Length: 88
Image (cartoon, rainbow, N blue to C red; front, side):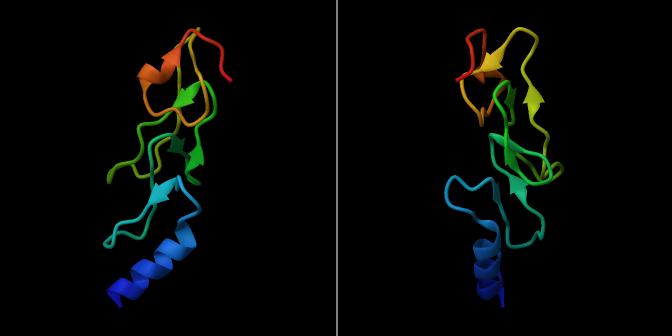
């Protein structure tokens, strides 16, 4: 069942690239990829970032950039993405 279950999970949970989350064979929950956050692993909006999920926090929230800073686009992956320039 292992390979079949993996194929079913992949088909049900992997939208076209870049997929917002990944699955591991031994866990049933999604883990958000970098640039995505929240229960549905949605892409972080401009002005927010997310390094992605981990086993202890599979669906992190997108973190807002510090006051006066924003990101140049949606889906930022780190604090270093926050700049003083306007978002596109």
